[in-house]
Image (tube, rainbow, N blue to C red):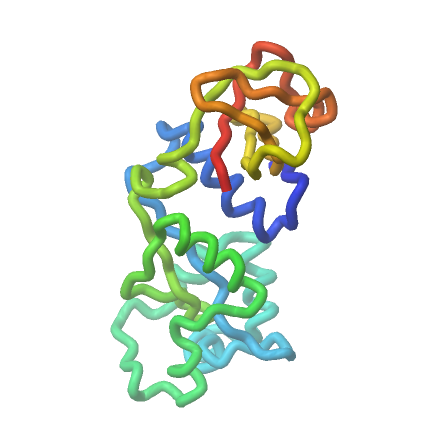
Length: 210
């Protein structure tokens, strides 16, 4: 998705949620997301070193690259399916379980505010937390609205911030805009905002206050 207006760390998680809101038939009633777990400044993951590296002659960075080329499922299916006893793991690996990588902390905080919760599962690669939520209870989905577009002058300094998406499946776009929007009425976008979203007069957008 093309996301402009705010840092991608803020826009991307919320923008993805509006995709779910616009195309519910493509998603289950509940959704799950994995958050990147702890790794040190050298890119080494103590959790991976304690478990995954015993089954693959790869360091954590190489395993992540391989997952990017294939999929995380590819390696996960080759991992052992029997229980792993946590007390037998090195202290560093135990301490890493459920920890969030600093680069992923913003995403984690956003999703928790959106209504996601942690559960009893962690990522088999780096021990990062797994979050889950019922789609109907996710804030940006439940509170978003589909409204028609009116092209005009956007009033500056009197509105609030909204995440606005074109709700399309192909060429999906989302932007963060300051809007003077009144529920039940069309949303006024100037030409620059409309072009960024790829919409015109009379089209519909999905928006939610942030």
